[in-house]
Length: 371
Image 1 (cartoon, rainbow, N blue to C red):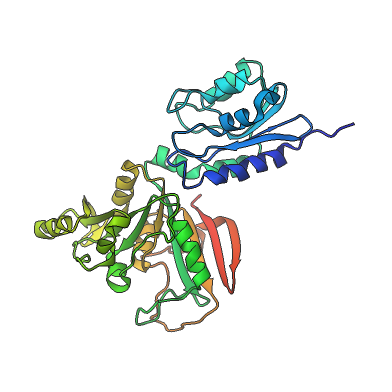
Image 2 (image 1 turned 180 degrees about the horizontal axis):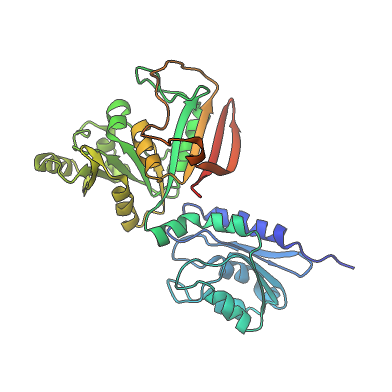
């Protein structure tokens, strides 16, 4: 007697394949699919490979051919039921002749929201929803953030010593982490729609903020600079405009001459409301990036920008590189400035923790939980 399939294991396989689309499918969500027999033998796999191209279910169905008939489909996100850049996947699933469909999570998009699942059930398919639901929902979290909150999923990255310092008391920070850690940062940059830094970082570090080698995406480089005075013709961001666009966010009362000078350098300029004199409201910046369709944004900045993001509850995910080194000094810089939280019960937890050893460095990643 053969054993029945393990839905969790097969959905985990679908999730694994879904992640192959990271950096290629945005602003769409990453989705994976598996076609398997009732006993759990994998027939085919598929994932959404690029924005505008066939969805995961279609790729898995095509790979399986006629073997879909009477077998099972595992898909991390509810099949769509509407015409967009591609026809409805729910119709293709029905036509393929599956017996059962296992869905990781319901599509939160208002124009789907359970309609694909209902269409499958109306056609007589047995549908199970919620297999590996937590992982499936996390996979589409950036997509959901952009769709429902109209802002990108915000990643905060920093490198620090064991005693929690990102720079010495004199501001020196090059380099705290190892070459291998910095190579991982370049991979992370290549999956982002935008990279944000502040005027202080531009002045002190003169960064390029490019992915080297280039990744699947070419991020927009964003500078938060209230008065618009940090960039000049010999700044690396200006000298590398052929490698990616630059957007400078200035205060809406910035001097007209300074705005004109920036535009003459070849950058875009966005006038943003201030949260207080001399400080741009980062919620306005994120709304602007949301309007531009940015799904994932990486912040590589000093403690001032990170503190403002934290105080505004605008950090969704952290990537913290910890080097086995010590700086010391009461005035040495920590990663997050701003006001911070007043009490321990008020602080957010970091969940979905991942630990990665990179030589002697340690990378800790996780999602900021505000509930």
